[in-house]
Length: 265
Image (cartoon, rainbow, N blue to C red; front, top):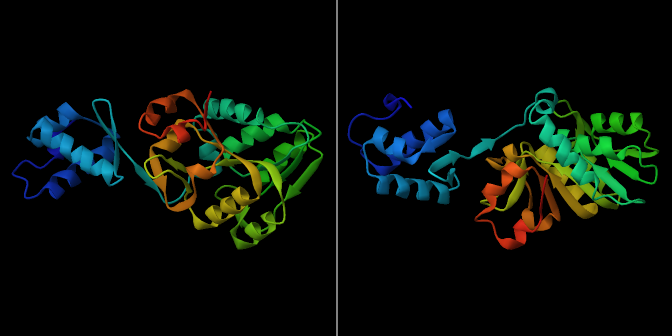
């Protein structure tokens, strides 16, 4: 790390020092305690106090030897970008989520790219009935041989190729399903919530949770280092969280009741 990223003189306040620390985290993702001490010219004890305070404010997550930034996602990436991100992990997660579905279920699958992987695994099971707001999910189910598919109407959102907004939420509430499989922008463990980048999508996912007997969140490890603008639901309202093994280390300080919801693949 280039120490010139940091202030060379005397700090006028802890807030100034912490702001520079956060700026470094945003550029480097992870900050080592020893490197921070040398760069800032303060003691290890001071660095640790700063990290503890910033973690309590939800601005970073302490990890072995240092800390990592918690990113605020105000919008998600477009579908083509998300499809290519952690693709192998998403395929494993989607397969594991699909294994939670039993014959005869009515299954709601949202428009997320990880949810799409579950749809690929479920499309050929003829006893299932599907509800979706995702055009990619619809195409996957139809091409895979699914027989009973209900498409939710609403405002088309090109970002994730979905139907969203108040009209979509109202239509979702006309259904009752056994399982809902949801992708999310963020699983914020410090606040105990799932969240998404826009209220349009958040409103729809809230309705999905309302109508489902069992809610399954599918999220790879990258979704756990951030928070997002629109809160969807508390983690206590989610029945299963399917993720890859890289997420395990993030759960050390999570209550046992929440840890029990996790399925690792």
